[in-house]
Length: 315
Image (cartoon, rainbow, N blue to C red; front, side, top):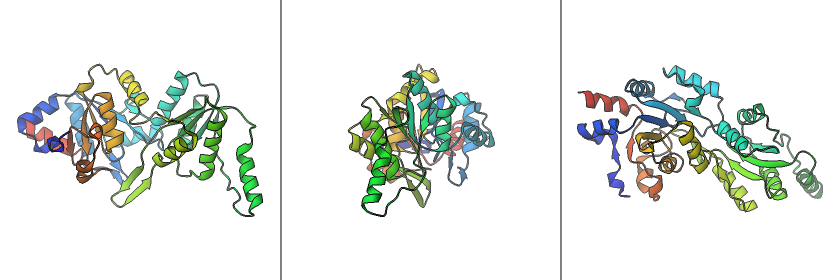
């Protein structure tokens, strides 16, 4: 793909802007880094979303962030003047629940994730195993090693049919070892993952290590290939196309701030794609990216550019 063809939305001619706005009926958007960041809503996003709705565009939000409840998501959108129902928001925990139900999971689930994520699994009747929550001994040489090993060789408890990995701020070697043991003991145990981000941007000067690295560790340690239920996974794309009754994907616009997760997902679904520079990707990063299947069709500084876009078309 010739990256010089990736144009800023506001650099389009008036005719091209109108053609672009007429080319989609629905907008699906990422949340973190696009709608809001660590400090609050991104300026102009509320007005831009309302403009899109007023002009007949359907809105949906596809998040990889399982740290918030659905009620918290709806509250945040309400503050932006957007009334969103549960079916308008795709949450990684609920996608995981849907998948586990689709395969008839009856065995226990070991989950590396937030309490929010685990509670959604529990509320749908799944037996959830987590931990360890206590510190394991790291002194005393042989005794410490023996205690550590015995913790993971204990085969009591329910049989685990799936290991689920998502964002977990308390993840440790002990959690990864426990996941590895469940996967090694049961060849039919599934490795399911939500967010695959390697870096989670919190602001201009703060990035957090994402779960992508821990997923890599488990894949290499067990020889398993994870099934990705978050962006940009194939399973999620099937869920999205079904949930929103998408029959003409080329008339859906996907908006995000990450190249592999958001733009890659848009490509997988057959959507049009806009990269927002308000989150985890800069223009230089976009230009340097060497995977054409993870590049956008257009880019913009933020959602606020849609305000100017509509103004330019009307004037």
